[in-house]
Every structure is written in structure tokens, then in C-alpha cells.
Image (tube, rainbow, N blue to C red; front, side, top):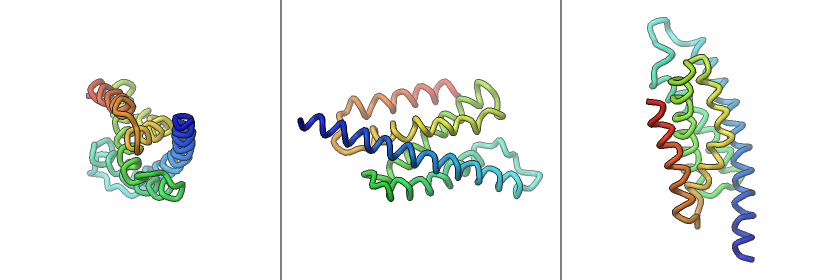
Length: 143
């Protein structure tokens, strides 16, 4: 019975984190468009620093959404989810080219629920390590 309640709470948290990922994606595109419009000509829009900005601003907004949805450790979930999306973006950029990089942000629909598994309280070590190993492998493929 206790295990059933645990998985019920986990699924609820993963669903709410997916909704927060949608806020991440929408703010990401607003940040990208405003940065592209306001970026001087001598700045390379493909640089990792600019991509990190594209992830950092939406991650801050998604932290607020996660906090409002009462996700435990919302700041950690936002940080890990943002890093997971950055890894996906690097992988897609390496495999398909930069024009498809922003499409990797749709991976937030997967990244944030996995971040809930990594950062969630009372999770077994196996369920924390599997998503980390997956994204470590994807990072290795993207470099």
C-alpha cells in the first residue's frame, strides 16, 4: 500500500513537472528571439555561452512554476532539468546541425520528469543513477 502511494505521488510530481517544462519551452523561445534581435553583429549566436543563457533564463522561470506546483526541491529539479536540456541541445546540434538545436528544447517534456526522479526525496539510488547515466552518455555522444 505504501509503495502504491509512493508511485502515485511520483506520477503526480512528474505530470506537474511536465507542465513546468512547457513554461520552460515557451520562455526559451521568447529569450532566444529577444537575444537574436538584440545581439550585436560581432557576437556568435552559436556559442555555448549564449546557449547557456538560453537555458538559464527559462530555468529560472521554470523553477517558479515548479515551486508553485509544489514539486519538492524545485530549485534542484529546475537546475537538473535545465542541464538535461542543454545536453540534448548539444547532441542535436552535433548530429543534425544548429538549425535543429532549439527543437531539442522540446526534450524538456522528458527532461523535467527525469529530473524529478533524480532530485526527488526517497528515491532509490537506481532511479537516481539511470537518468544521470543516460544524459552522461548523451553528453558524451554530443561532444
